[in-house]
Length: 319
Image 1 (tube, one colour):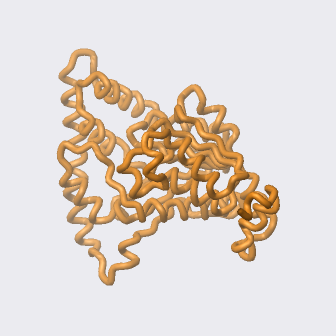
Image 2: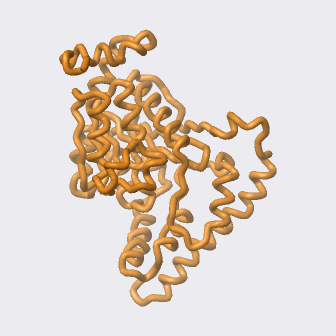
Image 3: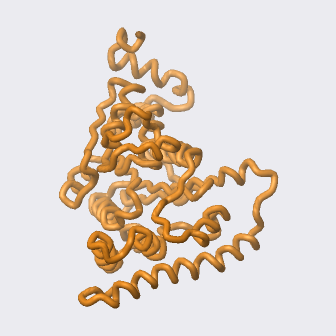
């Protein structure tokens, strides 16, 4: 009942009281007033939104076109009664259960080529939590962020390894994703994606192509052995396997990075936490990783090539 009796400022003061000994008032105000854009409300974006509000962020825009499913509940902060509801809407609904005074909005059509400029222009920090199957929208987001000089944080959950990559586009002219995705590669992706929509290739072939075409900034030597084994053994599978504990750690890393960026601090370019590695008494050796890498990299190239061969046999498609 206490929240009903408190006005917005009183509520916020009480809300951040337990942690304000560690942050000065200037930073607390920056966090409170910053505009945080979260594109994607899945296993990266949804937990990050929750942790951001708990950390004192009050201005959030959440974008996602998907709906909540039972399979999401193990790693995303939704409840069973929200199944079937738009993820962005459900996320905002849950954020208001934490702080009813937040100024949050949801965009149920997700990020599009038509609305990207508007939402990116109004953001102070952007969380790229877009499904990897939407490489074209990922590239669009980073292109716009470069032009508008906005920092972008990207999360990768690699089995038990949590990774956050920080692109400081606000620090000067850079290539989107440091050139790891280009307009040429997006043209090819669009051809492959259209073939999937037309029923020419299956969804698992689309995923195989994407895994072979874009690994982003991921250093193969940091990929956990569990993820390498999964990539080697996957057959006719279009799923992206994720662990809830990894998603929670990514959210914490995201929020800490956002806070330090707002405080004008330098942050690491790539932040990784190997969760099982911090807990196990012994970990796989570098030689074990190298053996698995020697198997997984050729497998991924072959799977990508198989998709291209299928499409090259079809008139009018040449990738």
